[in-house]
Image (tube, rainbow, N blue to C red; front, side, top):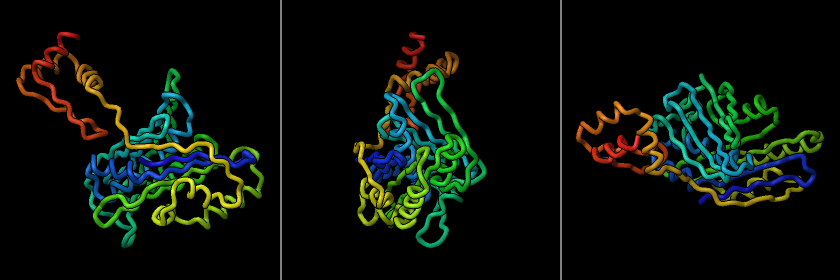
Length: 291
């Protein structure tokens, strides 16, 4: 389990959220068998989605982040529920190691910069809200920052980090999102900028053992912080056999008849988790009868 912490300064000028996401990123790595660069990219996006999904404060809402950057990883996608539980995938999880320099994964090159970050907010209304921005760096944190400034006119600082160990497992993962609210005086802005600069890289803080609350306390040092919520979050998939059946139905009668007449049991694996659903020709026949 990871932990997500939401906070606000008592003067009401800064709201912030942080998450310690090592366990959920490691679960994603195990499911998708990602190599380190893909682990870092997917892990950062899952971490951002968790915080943004929780920030919506919409019961039964969800948030989807999709990055298509034209790089070797292909599409990277993460979905969060209303609490901050996430699931996701990367199109090409086996992209071999890309490094900027020894020990520093080049996520931007693997994601690519020729493309878009798309944010889909399901706010339990008729239509979801969809916003897209051109990628800035493909490093994901800067791209999320750019999204908030361009699409939501909210000055935001986003930091995301995934530290992959020598055995390819996730050693540390997490991040924070800090937003300035209207009317914030220069003194608060200056204090915040100093705090972010002094705190340094989020991976280094996590590797020192700082949890989500300590991340926020370090970054917002000197600002009077009130913790609003501390909640456990995890990698969680919502797939069910019934949902897979609905996907099969969407193929149409003709294709289902071909599958049934083929006489072979088919296997459908969930794109988000390692669950495999098997359907015999008889079961396909049953679906056809119910159509």
